Length: 284
Image 1 (tube, rainbow, N blue to C red):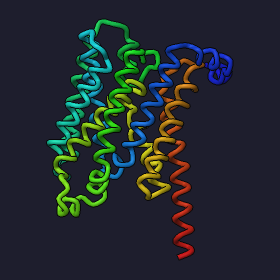
Image 2: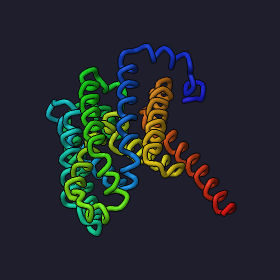
Image 3: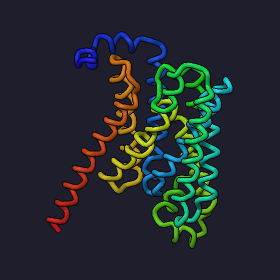
């Protein structure tokens, strides 16, 4: 593949007129919104590894659905919710959280690989569960994705203040009567649903590029929670929509472009945040 094919603007513009591309862009916009909203708290609560573990169970659910002839989106959603509940309930204690996530991740990945090996269909369907595939976003999938994202955002909005309090200072939150032990699995389920949505777009292996990287980038340039959420949404939208558009002409999985854009944004924010910190130290 040469550079002319990679940056064929005419081909990209023609492909943007296709229905499945518009579906993919709409799905990407919804995913960017929900992942950006949750991202800063995922980072604040040190849940990056948990997101990865949840993605593996979403992958397992999607693989089971593929084998049984069910909706892949529904399978991913069920797998992610089960994983989130397991991680949220078994990983309450910080000292054992990583070991619980590691055990769940290994189990989910192993079972998912087994289920995919039993699937007699096309290899491309198997590959898309790992790295994403824009042609797999149907109108039905858009409805499921939109309803799930709306539910996540509504519940998150209702619980935002206690969640933020429990994320910033869990000890004081417990002393003030905030139900931290209940909020932990609830937030894990919200993250699990968002992760399942991301698996359909960027694949199980690269979910972190949307669920973690935009939030991590935003946290580098601001300590204001509301501004961090807004920036994370903007960063996620740029990454996923830009990744979809750039992937059209070469016809490659969007995950390579999404991860590259996300990482570039993170590097820029890290540089800006570091420069600002050095100026504050020098002036103080």
